[in-house]
Image (cartoon, rainbow, N blue to C red; front, top):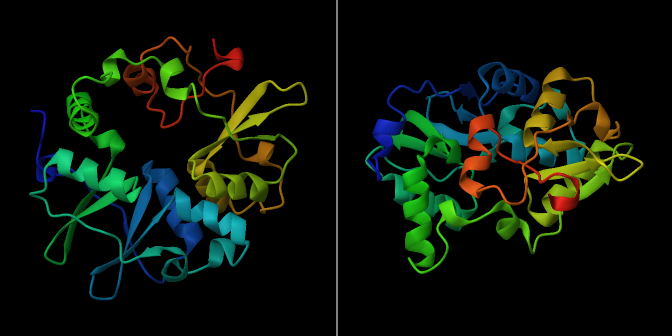
Length: 248
């Protein structure tokens, strides 16, 4: 099935839902424990009023306000765009691309039934979406090497001693989901993403001024530039997969 309804994708989901008065630290700990990228936030009537993701954790690190004891109602992204369970996968992907979303809540009436992210879609759905967006004459995802994908991209990077706040500021400024961390010799030492910001807030031990090396994901899995893009990340369940040093 290349264009499943979202009801099929989320049918066995138990989305993480917390009330608006829960704290950011509680939300981040739950995200780490449940290995999920988002928390849906509801009011006293259990109506969806917001969503909290790694992007919000990054923003908190930049602003340095409140941190872990901040109520979700003040830290969440309010009034998120939602879709119905009958929405088809490719239509959901279109919304996510056009609006720049990484997570999309699925709601029926006032009832939250799930949330989808890119990891929930099958390869054929992603390929069909790209084909519809760019036309059949362009390279399909299965034909593109990682080198083709990153050829005109300049990676955002910071040094191991730089503060978390600087890494987060660069992520927001460049609209990217990851910063590469390099050591004194310029070699790749780690990667910092929204997941790492969530872990830092969950632990409560890292301040925005702490060194990014304290919370980064060290020695990340890399992929050769000749690898096929759609097959590189999936086996490792990675959202960001940097090429090795030198791009080889």
